[in-house]
Image 1: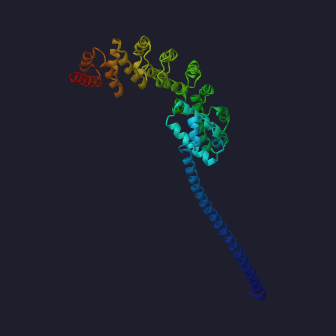
Image 2: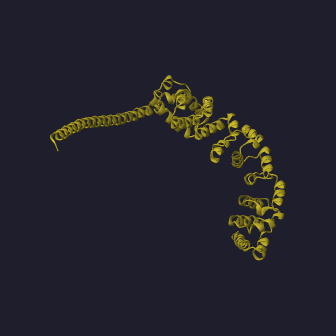
Image 3: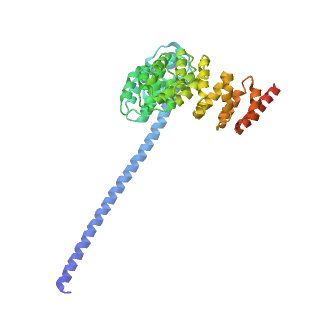
Length: 386
């Protein structure tokens, strides 16, 4: 290698060494900056945690103080004076956020204790005067949890003055199914007719349990309206509506007419639910049920299990001699529960002992013979115990 080549190699190596030395210094500086930034962030986070804990402890102390003052005996307590006389002191209207939180807890506790009508009215009036502004603000929050909790407070305090605001929430595209449920439940409890329009919607967004909680507290006027528009309801709401009729123990002529029309329909689910509801109605037309069950006898084996079970139970309450052959046939049903229900229904008839003995010895189905024998033994044992 000549001298010229050696000189070039030496120069290139020197340049590379300088380049690496410069990069190393730069990396050290960047590492220092990053470490310093992380340290500052950690110190800020630690300081925030300390401040938050201090603020929380201070909030607890302040709320305990206000709780003591609100619950104080004697003339010094503006809240106690309000519940005793109904006079609203200005001190109750000009409250800080901590004071409002304490007052809200006290009022909710009073509501849970089942206050009398006068106290209930004063709780609702006070909550409206104190919380109305803050609740309006929270209902417009972007946080879902804040909106839902506020809706629950509005419902518990029965703030009917905020119903127009709730309509805006329903029309909003951001309204979630849970928010819709809480609003509709409040509509139902306050007798707000807008709930009927929502129940007539074809897009069912709620569960059966939620619809049931909305339907049960409806006023009599709303019930009548819904029965008039029953065919316009979605299928899910129709099924839940029948269950609500049964739970409310509706005995009106309109309710009974609706149930009697449904048990003659072609939908098995609605028939079953209507039969279950009619079983609890004292004014039901037994002649109509009798005719229905006799017609049902022709296609009974093809009916769903739930309907066969309800029919077996109904035949025990109506107790017509024409049902005895059908009950015997149901005692051979593939479902044990239906066999048992049919046997129990047959045991309630006057000729039960003779029919059960005949079934136990002559029925072609072994399950029917077995269940008849067991039912006969229980019935005879019960007579001996008497």
